Image (cartoon, rainbow, N blue to C red; front, top):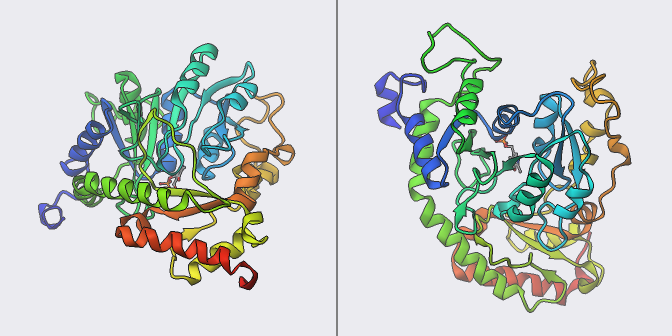
Length: 385
Ligand SMILES: Cc1ncc(COP(=O)(O)O)c(C=O)c1O
């Protein structure tokens, strides 16, 4: 970091930190090409464009995700179509995704939510059958692997986030990963004002923007990546211990194991909560009680499905002008009519998040979480709103 300050090369154009980080992160994730950008939202937006998604194309996204999975598509004029999640894994339900396909569907965006890879076999089959591109939302999935290969470039292209809450962070930051050199070259150009590698500095060939990371961010990210394998291992070991500790507690379920998931990045450790087993204590009350026990990293997660966000319900998505797909897509979905039962239930009643930083504690800390949950169950009649 100090070296960047004194080098005089603060931008990535002439520096080496971002360039090195792109190479190191791509290699770590088993991808051929890495293109760093300012954040995960931009990574997804540019990834969609680089993969050929355009105005009026439908893009299938899960309902249970951060809003950017859908708004990245909207920003380029594509139409997000929401599919439900699997009740046992909280990732895209491929069967429901199949039911959402129309002649206008161009892409599918599996989200490796919480660091757990989505069912990439089912998604690859679906994509092959319907000629769809796959854009992985791997914003939370550094180090996650599906059948021995790390995620991000399992499909056509993927996007990662290095925002402040993430397991690897520079405050903000993002990365696109892919294996196809043409998609990689277009992604690079889109992220760098439409430049081409052999072009003049002031020659611009495609409609891109300046989405480059700074060298300061590159230097921080390189250091974070170096210590990441050890952190990942620690989170995984603690998650396995916590899972064992929670297994006996009635009303608490953790997502189904899947042998094809060879690494979970554990950005979020999901707990499925059933209030009936806790004397009717609501999810909100349960979280409050756990926080009162000292576990500030416990959270209710997305309080609204992405399709119920005010922006998705507002006329013109809250803007004064119609969306880009206006007049191109003949019958865009009416998001006020979308109701996906598993997603709705996860948001309102069921999903409890134990955030990644809690998994960097000691084994004893995991035992303390399980113990606190048991205590809440035992004294459920005393838990106050
Ligand atoms: C699932 C998912 N997609 C996309 C994003 C967007 O990333 P960023 O916040 O870096 O723009 C995030 C980050 O919060 C995310 O969690």
